[in-house]
Picture (cartoon, rainbow, N blue to C red):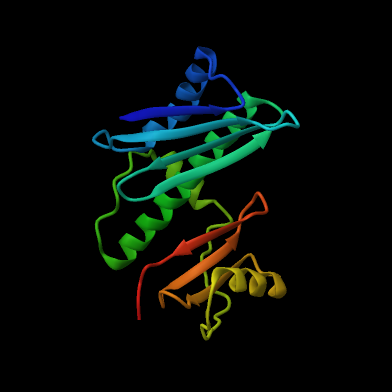
Length: 188
């Protein structure tokens, strides 16, 4: 069963908006087993330029679905994000079940139809081949130096060894232009 946690930023979540989100995102329930309980975390935001951003995160036992879309209309953003999540589910189901069949395992049981599987099999972007491998030497540094290194290289992320904790960390550039930090907590 899919439950909803709907929040609004710079917008009042009216009953009409709530109903629309539950109706559209709720259609994804057809892809899940009946015994799966999850909460769809939906964040609705109106930007100063009057565009509407919708973010949806659905944690499931076997994966986390997440998508966001921005458009001039809140309802259109809900439609776009729902379509994106449905493509993710189809792609995931096809890939996992194909790998399971190759290895002789039982396929993950999504509640999908043959039509869904056929649509996902026709997806052109379902190659996950590694086309390049890089080996890096990690230098101890703090996150400010790591951000400077990342910017100098023109990359969107940078892996480094934290000088204080000896843990492997990652700094990255977020979609909003600010920076994020992923701490692994693993020590050598």
